[in-house]
Amino acid sequence: MLNKCFILNSVVHNPCFNLHHSDMSLKFNSYPIVNHNGVAIATEMMLVLSQKVHQQHLNEFNTGKTLNQLLGIVKKIVINSNGSIFNEKHTLIFVNIERASLCDVRGLNQIRELSILLRHLGGNLVVGLTNANPCKRCPRVLQGLLFLKENDILLAANDFNYLAQDFRDSELKSHLYDFVKLSMPNTDDGMDILVEFIHSELVLNGLKVIVEAVEIMDHLKSLDKSRIYGYQGHFVKSKKAKTILAGA
View 1 (tube, rainbow, N blue to C red):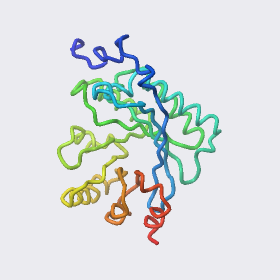
View 2 (cartoon, helix red, strand yellow; view 1 turned 45 degrees about the vertical axis):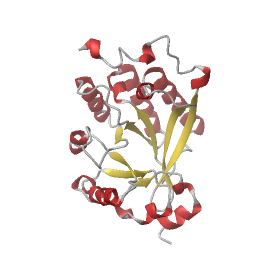
View 3 (cartoon, rainbow, N blue to C red; view 1 turned 180 degrees about the vertical axis):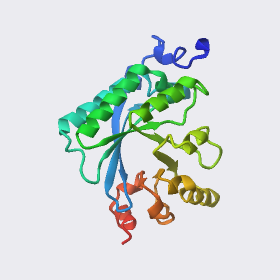
């Protein structure tokens, strides 16, 4: 089994590959998540590559040293703000990790420590799991998920494929996730499926939906706001979006 391990064979662990090379530098970005009133309720923080790289490298991006660096930056921002980053509405910070990081004990402990710090300062950490699945059915992935749940760390299923069969469907139905992030569809059939999902029993039982890729006005007008926890996308940053979300 070990000779098939994604982490052990990762190019991230190959000295010939360096994410910090001049043409592959890292950039910190943050993106707001707003509620149906257009008010920021959470911030997604991430490191992004300065240019496109091979998909395999992207799948490995939020693992190892890069994950360590991201968690360190988030910790520094929160400490420097002395908790002022949080308020009555804005209580969550989302960070994204790869499923391959769920077998990294050091990384898991860093996530737990950051979560404890955020709770102490009045907020909460949400760990978003990407939709890359290089580890397939490795049991250590599930062990990592359960470790996070046992430590009361909120989890999000990023880029969940509601239009087809997502490999995390059983995990979602087992209530491992607190949030699910769904992209706006670009067809009427896709919109029908999205509407069906946000009215599903999972959502009725407390799964929080965040709709991503909200880029135009019609996206905001086409969904039942009462079923959606938050919105993300270029359009939600505009004043017009806040007016629509508030129902004016």
